[in-house]
Image (cartoon, rainbow, N blue to C red; front, side):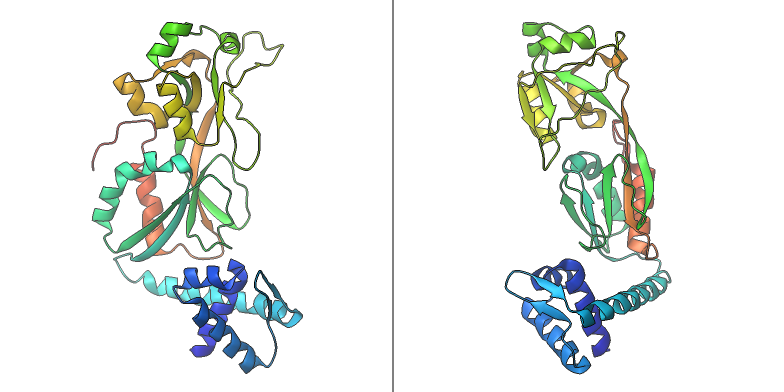
Length: 302
């Protein structure tokens, strides 16, 4: 059993990229992780990792051992998952990565989920960066759009649309656009994708499609919440997912324009590693989202 624990620690260190990151995933101290690696290397009689203060790298022997060891660890986890299926009460820590705006769609239904599955501890990470689900030890990731990856399985959670919104006061001062071309003369609040300068395109139906829509940028941000707040303060028009502003549209703090010209649809999916069986805690989470997630619609308690 000690040999297996050492192997699991070694595989986790390689996947995490550092002893500190591995210790966080394993719930151990960095010192305990280092000692487990040393005992494993001493028993094997070879050095598996080159370690420095900044990084680790595999030796030739470590590369060979990792390739075999990873398969063994996966098989052990699959066996544990099979045993866990015998239990009717899914339990344990479930790590899920979601887009930064994801709390708006998830938090309303979490009380019902927690009430149904009190033994599942949710660890939610809200960010917009693309992550490596397997390497970072995440159980599942929720993202919009297509994320082709042969190592991931997925399930669609539902579609959503986009709307152009602004404050009533903004339109009272600057007029309401009647066609997409009118937007070229308005203050546009643009979403900037994380990690770069690329701006999100506003995909609208143009009757005169000969020339592309040329939009200015009164304000750009890589945070949708900031754009929505700016729009509510009368700084301009924002292009956002409909479910994000359903409440503001209902109470009149924001109004939508050019609805008849919208042509873009998106969808959210949940993805998880395909190399392992679906753990009970993840299976019930996926099923619950598919049943209860109502994008852009008022939520009713079940």
